[in-house]
Length: 305
Image (cartoon, rainbow, N blue to C red; front, side):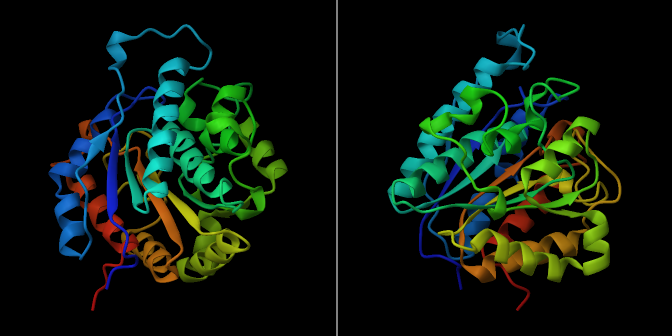
């Protein structure tokens, strides 16, 4: 049984401008080669024709800004936000495949904008090894993929934060950050001040993923119309997903990741999903894309029996 009767609209965002290493622009192609669309169809969904947001190749652009490739990222996220909002307005469910994690500024803005028109709030699960809560002032690198969650909460660059014309996109009390284990020094204080709910790897070790998943779902569905799942593949342990440019040992194992996403499916409250930071250049025979595909299927209702 599928978790929704809505058609799935897959939107690729072939962008690596926000990342520290090249290659995430090929993430959407890797997931397509792994047969993502066909697998969702076999699961019982109607999958509309796939589409991509237009992103110029890095080699065709230069970046003198402290925020690397700011204008390219802003343009892509603005286009993505509008497309995601339209998909939801049309009654379908957006599945965004990236691309580095900076694209979340567009995805989440689009979902929040759709709900805002109905005076509803959005919950957000952010699965990641990193906090992604740097601001332009705190970032040691200037790489925007380390900043999207901060901008969605209304911090940092005004134009990034203001995509779709309002800020913040989510209330901090409705955000659950799961899997973190690598935080920059300046970012740590921002996370503490923000008021979001965090689940480090120690929390997962001590509580177990089942309890963490249940608690997170309570947080993101409390007073909201539903939640968005922002899934960074580097939240998983590198032995599970080797094809990413920001690997951190000691992460979530394959079954734990499946369990989290199975709980998301069971909730029937997931409004949208994105998968980011898949880097085929660093992968082994596309195994990371195949495993990411299977994780996505769990989020959409694939079960063992």
